[in-house]
Length: 394
Image 1 (tube, helix red, strand yellow):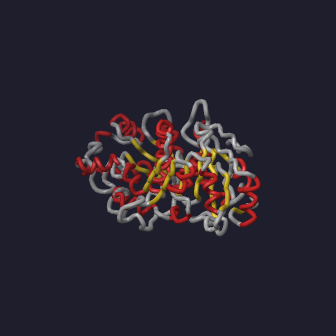
Image 2 (cartoon, rainbow, N blue to C red; image 1 turned 135 degrees about the vertical axis):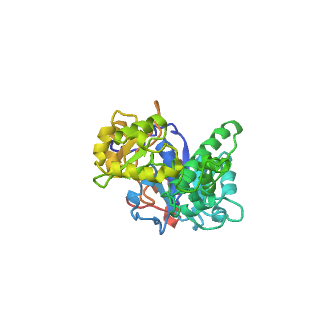
Image 3 (tube, rainbow, N blue to C red; image 1 turned 45 degrees about the vertical axis):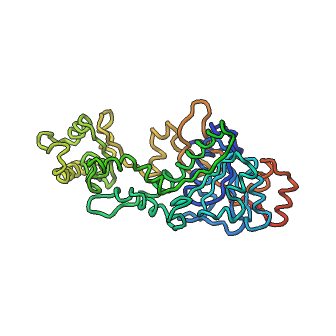
């Protein structure tokens, strides 16, 4: 695993891009992380007082979503606080914020304020339900946005409640990643128009977008109740099964030739099994497959499947995934300041992306980051003297 370098290298394909991130939680930081991973110079604006994390992690130095950028601590309620942010906006290509609609306007750093100072700025907004509409001010978290999108109703096993899929669909896939795509699309457009614009990314809409295929399946009648379909744990040949040692393997043998390999691997006779896609027999077939797979350990099944086109893989724990030979060969994970974490993706042949800064403490780089972006040293010092910005020890 590679160790981080103490200074930013800006080697990725977004090198030269400057982004202001107004500190938030979940999808906003994930969006900023993606851009920083790919080489953008991202400054995170944290609260000068009372900055805190939400969730199981309480230490900013281990909050991996904050990697790859510097932190400036600003008191946005101080008369000079908004000016500190707007001074960065003047020099930025994009801004990311994740407040409820109307909050940044009240703070004096809304789209109109920012575009007055920098008409080319792409202003990225991340919310649950969007900037307008009847639910724009409704509070929620990932589970609520995914539920309202219609996607959560599709996830889970038959006869069981809908299953929250971590925070992957709302916060990260339908939220932060979608906002990053929107920002890059708007920056591409600004190359010809010379104008910035607002990107309104809503997690509810992003979750719905991720479910596009399944909305189509429901309307054409090929998708039935939750947990009774091919890719949602309904099919016996597409599920996770427990092994003799209490571990698990994942089976994805959908195509007929993969399915035939699976049946042979398990030591079953295909002629004695129901037809592969006889849905009425799927519950019984799952019991047969489960009984067969419980006869060997996870690693034994993986070894027996090696070299065969059967679509069987181990269900790895995170610690195991970081040590897996393939993942090691690909550099799928990196180690930065003792914390193992997924490496930037995708791969670029000429401009490799890197993780070159660990997560910062709020305000760890205040004076350094302001002056690096062209704010005069005396101005930054004056803001710090009156409490508009704050520096913190790492």
